[in-house]
Amino acid sequence: MPMRKGAKRKRVQKDKEEEVVKASSSSQDNHKQESTKAPTRAKRVKASKPQPEPEYFEDKRNLEDLWKEAFPVGTEWDQLDAVYQFNWNFSNLEDAFEEGGVLHGKKVYLFGCTEPQLVPYKDEQKVICVPAVVAIVSPFPPSDKIGINSVQRESEEIIPMKQMKMDWVPYIPLENRESQVDRLKSQIFILSCTQRRSALRHLKIDRVKKYEYCLPYFYHPFKEDELEQSTEVQIIFPAEPKPVFCEFDWELDELEEFADNLIKEEELSEDQKDAFKEFVKEKVREAKKANREARESRKKVLAEMSEETKKAYENMRFYKFYPVETPDTPDISKVKAPFINRYYGKAHEVF
Image (tube, rainbow, N blue to C red):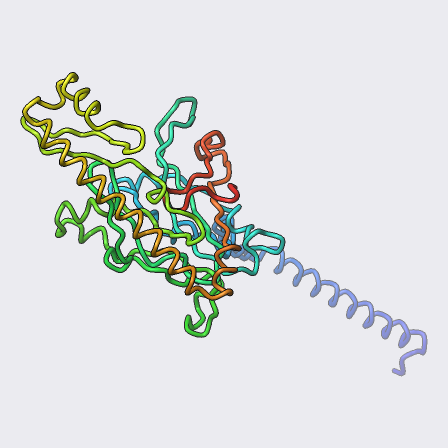
């Protein structure tokens, strides 16, 4: 029986509705499956370790170790560690080489020294070995000799530096340490000592003590040495039961009276008086001869000296540098002094 048109339309519509229901049902099933699926475990995130704060180090100043490199002449070996127990700051010495500084663009020779001083530190007074650096502006080394003198020694010695393993050597600033030294034209020279502390125990006591009595020597041909001007002699008369120690001035003291006073003070016995007087006369003769020879030698040096060298001596300048004040170092502001040593005399300027 042929289907009516209306029935066919209804059938097609019904088929379409079934397809829509199926699709909807399928979608719900899929959604249900997805919702009932066991949830996947989240990946564990590893806790990152806390990063340490970056450390910052101050750049080293170009001449920061200059004061340490200049050997502290005359310092007792067992006091060296005490000198370096403080973080002394010599930035004033470094600044002197900068533009506008007293040492800028000049040839300079430096040596170190130390001065035991009673200074305030941490609310109390302490004896501190204070370091200082002496700078000599000169076109040539101020001297190649060392003076050895002390109260205990009968006389001073002036000997070549090299006998004490000392010499002027070029100082290489930190930024140039990688360069070839022989290619650098150094303008800074330091007095260096190659004697190793570890080898001291193999030396005789007298040799070790010599280092403690060392003074950088300087002879200025235009100035009379204080020994040339002096009229005093040191007397160590080998008397019994003990030697007689005294100073005799041949211009101010009368020998007979001088000897009588020593007898009164029981420093000299009556029976040794004549021997003492002869001893003093001999010492006076030696001193006068030495003074005369020194004057003649100086005159000869001046006569043979070139005009260029004379000018160099006239323009030679001495500067003395002490550490600058910092919160962690002793206050040395009241102990600064221009005196260098008996050969150099006083500095032209103190920093």
